[in-house]
Amino acid sequence: MNKFIILIISIFLFEGISAQSIEVQADYNSIGDCIFSAYNNSKTPMYLNIDFADLENTTFNETLPYVKKLDPGFNSLFTLERDLDADIPRFNYEMKSFRSDPTSIINLDFPYLIPFGPGTKVKAKEVKSIAGFRGSKELKSWVAVGFYAKAGDKVYASRQGTIVEIAGKTKGDNPQNWYNTWNNSITLLQADGTLICYRNVVDKNKNLKLNQKIYAGELMGEIAPSATDLKILIYQNSLGSTDLRFIIPMFCVGENENEIVNIAKEYVVVHPNSVRGLEMTKKEKRKILGIK
Image 1 (cartoon, helix red, strand yellow):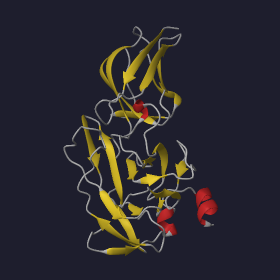
Image 2 (cartoon, helix red, strand yellow; image 1 turned 90 degrees about the vertical axis):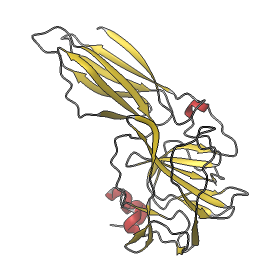
Image 3 (cartoon, one colour; image 1 turned 135 degrees about the vertical axis):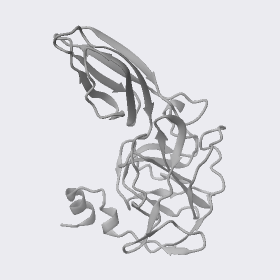
Image 4 (cartoon, one colour; image 1 turned 90 degrees about the horizontal axis):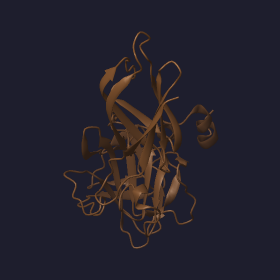
């Protein structure tokens, strides 16, 4: 069996930190088909894009653009089947990798929970800066949501997702695993392929771990000591650009009532089961929400 291995260096979020590599492998079987697989060496899921510029003796039958979510470890990709009356497949292609899904079509009306305890009164605030999010590199454009808060306030997940980074007072771990350069932050990969970063939040009791599934309305942590607000960034990578796309979410502000939060208003936090359960399975609804 003929075999070759290609190392891909990921496009990452900020200067000065190189991303973890993905190993892509193509194996020719006994009849000349080329079987592609990938190994994600990072600790959390990533997205791989492969773009074929030239193909001979085969066809690529996957949906274009080809983007595949890679869990940590080994991942099967696709097979280039040999044209039976021709030689083995030959091809040229380009590859990129991303922390979020660059092809995801975002539902801008999806309701997020205000991330404080039900019954709490909160006020939104204008976010004037996200300095340090990408280190020293300036973002061309961004949007964020802020809420006034005090140290020790409980913080709950606004939407279901998988934990991909937990940063405390200092950034531990290898810099190539960082999602941003903020400390005191928790980042989740959401079900729609976007990332959400909660800034000024700490996991004081060390209850969280990487790749843990977090449900909407589930307690994540608390506001960090000395912090006076909570910042939320929701964003995704772009397929053809190093720029990030940022999303302003609609928040659930009452039963069947959603809006972009207004800094002139005070809100009483609600976490309706109808919103909490939007991305849960039937089994999860029974177990977590008690819905039969």
